[in-house]
Image 1: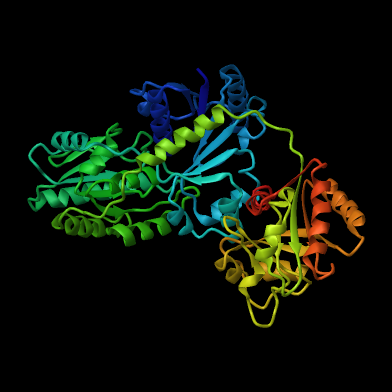
Image 2: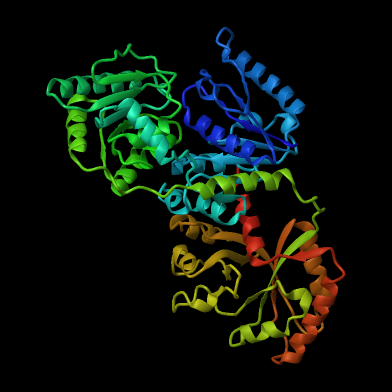
Length: 557
């Protein structure tokens, strides 16, 4: 059975480890691939009860960080070489240390990416961090991803490069029976539960977040007990908690780690949590009212995310202030259980498993031929739709453009966007002057790719940069070839030079100077088609061309 290596590294957070275990256990249960988790977690709590094989590297505290990092990388490289995984799955965000590992060269690689704030995603993309992955599964819905404030370039790369898929949030959803058992254990007499969790308990910045959160909640619990409130508090500190010791009291239970945290959060009446991806997802699956206490978190932008969650599902955002928390907890306890909650995402886990299996059993690769995007323009007044019927079979993937200028004074004419049925939109930007309308208007009308005759003019680049669309309008420079009577051979030589010079070439073939009759056009197109049939050239569809240009947005350095 083929092996899948799931690479996770951890010293503070715990959510991505839990997601990796969720995927690995589902993979093992499915029985088609053998998962192995490779970790560097400070705590083994999460792995104690999993049936999946785990290799956990120690944190090497007694040597310098540089030596420890080199040792970890070298041992990891040898381990991966020995495991010989069919697929390597990374989690959360791309780790640059893995890019140069010899053992990972030429292996299929997949990234399961939890939500990243827009600036962080854009930074990773512009550094080329996503290039190494055959597939990136974004653990968000498309709508939630759009709310993160991604740049137009990042949105275009995600939408059109063909490497990204949205699988929705991946977290464990407990059964009603699990929730009921957990509630009965922690609140045997039906007391309302207040669950407090700060993630794994580590501080991403040395600001004592865990100590402040749990100390404040301990004061809140003491005040509620003094007034005779029945609520019971459960503190799940996380295995990396390093704050002051917490004492159990008549209404406070303290646990360093709770393997049934998802069920406990779902059983709570109030959840006071750091709004990290996993804990928040699990809390939302239940009925708890949310009191979110954001902290510094790497690449997540918790404050903005917390605000969006509260707007959608209710709750409140707080600091670790006992006076503020007491009021919010009391108000939440007085309300009926929350009914607004997201749907369980069982399909997302299935999509993830299928994507891994597809990479584990790939189709044998083919040596790529030269690829060409060929666009035909016939001049103003010609019936472009009618001309498609006269195209010989080898030209079925050519793009048909009319002669309307995108910069016409009448504004954006719908004819400037070439969008045949089942094809993405292409707009031709003739000349050096940009259109009078902003790029977003082209995007809104279905355009995805702009082509320019010759090198992309600086004015066009500035037009796109100064009023960026989301997703961006991607641009491809094209060779402009004018067809005339008797020019076919010369035109073919020019097209051949363009295709040989560029891996993904684009040619705008202007047929407007041919005689204004269908026979002349048909004769020219037949000669073009016969020549293409003898060449190692594949005509790209508009979707393929757009995907290739969009992939360049992932390769910038």
